[in-house]
Length: 275
Image (tube, rainbow, N blue to C red; front, side, top):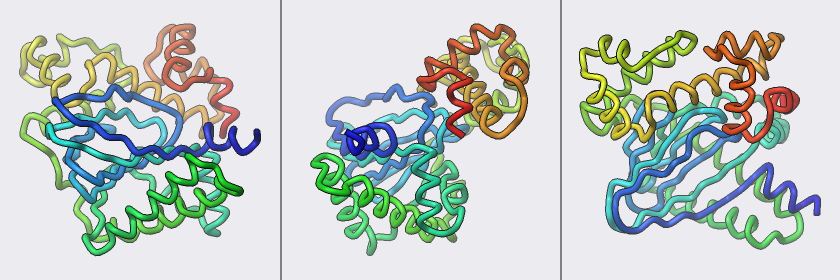
């Protein structure tokens, strides 16, 4: 039973196949880290404030709490591996490696695997998937060792890569600026009319274009940013929950608690204990 609990709560490995019409996945915010590896096809992923175009051989790095959405662009078969792991697992990997490496590696963005290394990465992820699905003896430990190898490889591949590359169109680039503005002003009582004025767009056009580019409604995205920031403060500050709610733009403490629980699966008080 202990092994099963660890598998389902602290480390998960999936292989997902999407075939057919263009579709956005509703992902949002969650309290665990994720790695996507595109083994076939292409998609765009909105992470934090940016849109990344991904194709075969690309990883997307999604830190815990980062708002994100996937948009499947091609109508052929799209296959990706998804490795999800908790902060607890990340700390265990750091202990195994003998240094605090995961915090450095788990920065949001896209990392391209060199062509000559893709077969090896594919085999490693396939082995993790086998261990996760079949649960032989010491499967969780084996998966963590593989995860450490994946993370070290990603840090090596990232060196010298230009992460600014990969915006899919000028429209996404402009909506990235909107997303960054929301992040800078998340404590304020923002509304669509004022935001549209800042970017010299009509409210309806801004609302529609932002959703097309990111997969989020503007208010939905703003709440996700506030939840993300609240999670950081819960783990890394001594502020009270009421003070954190206020700093993150929640004027109602009860609403903050409900919104946080919906996004993270636990209350702010319970989340703080995870740190």
